[in-house]
Image (cartoon, rainbow, N blue to C red):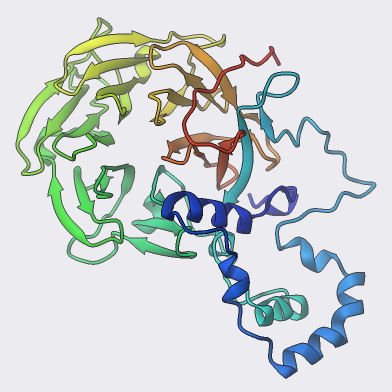
Length: 412
């Protein structure tokens, strides 16, 4: 479902790209999209003069650029356009910033391209959907990585360089079914391939480095996590329906098995349909133990420490947990496909707030089938939705990275 025309013009993708570039590269606040834009040709100038009145009269042509103008038939309410989380009167901690769906979201259009778009409806920058199923997310250094199993590739939104490219497509070290992504402090990208049942490791630009994992030891791998130093690579295996092979296997970069977490069970340290894992800045491994409706915390040597969560539809509970992320402060984020939201917890499992809710229309904060999530060093949260085929971006409302969100929202 393409709902891009329903998305209100908030701060604009150009603003998002510029802020992310500054935050991750330290560049000054000069608008390169303005400075680098070539001077318009004489033909383009004449064309713009010719169609100026037509452009004003036909604002519908401009709606495709990302801004929606309300009209008498627009029944959407302020609540459907909720941009701040939690909602007033609580203090806002996160703010909707943008959607990432195509190259047009990160690459500026030229003057000639804008003129061509007015005349033909299509500019020089592609607005085609970049992915067919955003199955996994990871973000660091101004790059947002989106695993796309149907195309056998990882789509990279390189906001810092204002371009989009694909990685994992060069044979013989290509991926077939990428389903999970992790990044270490060297910006190496770890891509779990569900078909190959191993992890393919690339540098940040997509050059293959090495592979990890024993296909014979893995039944249904579902997630990958990596320690900051890259010395421990964790592969989550959801196992078989009727067997006890539900586990997490830790590997070294030279493909030696270090230890296992599991097997199947409900006791502390046991797992039941684990789906994902994430390492935290303070040196912990958080495993999304979905069949037990909880998050389990281990140290990086696999020793159990604690857990939180239970089955239910109340605050801090889970129904269909799908993905997990962690921010600079060790706060844990869990997406739930039943609630279609992301719950945010302290490192010890205390619920702080949530973002999002169910919605069959593509509005900010409305999800039809929420899936992968990721957080980066700028404090941004990225949320993928399989129904609306989008990746939404949320920034800290105070504009600073880090800082623990607080302010429990009132019941909705």
